[in-house]
Length: 224
Image 1 (cartoon, helix red, strand yellow):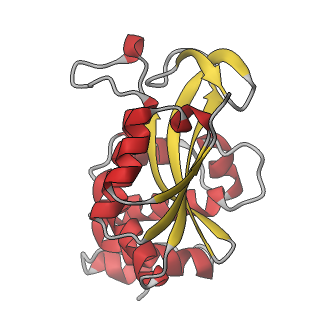
Image 2 (cartoon, one colour):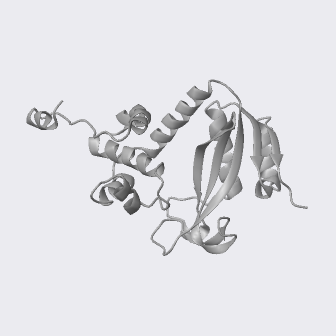
Image 3 (spheres, helix red, strand yellow):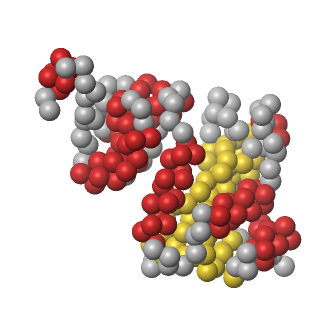
């Protein structure tokens, strides 16, 4: 329907199209967004992420997807009323549906990204694997699935250093975050045949117990 006609009839307009593959993928999440502008930002972010730009910052994504300002993308992430958890569960169920019961290898690892300043939550001086030393940045514990030589993201949890905690936060180690990830995936009925992790997890009796709790095979690195 023509956009002007929709406005005249006081109807919600259709979301602007991007590229076919992004529109098709994002359509399964459309009902999670009450406002069409939020849904459009959701699509623009996906388009920016798969674009060839080196820096995936909001200003750079705004440029490559040809929108006037990154402010709308920032508002979408920081202030709009969609649920991150609902989106995560929808995405994980979609992955599980595609897997159709086939077993995956679960890879657990942490990633550190350098950040300037202190405006971003949970940024602190800590070890960053990306630069191989202690620096100012943010660290996350990540879970990836591997099936038929395809690697895909599953769950990300931000590590929150003690000095950065908010009033509602509870301090959790990287081992605790990784253990939570495994529990979440098992409770969602993912079929995990093997867990891979490095020495940080291989040396943790807590993490080994969590793997044993679910009778999962593992290959974890242990430093001697």
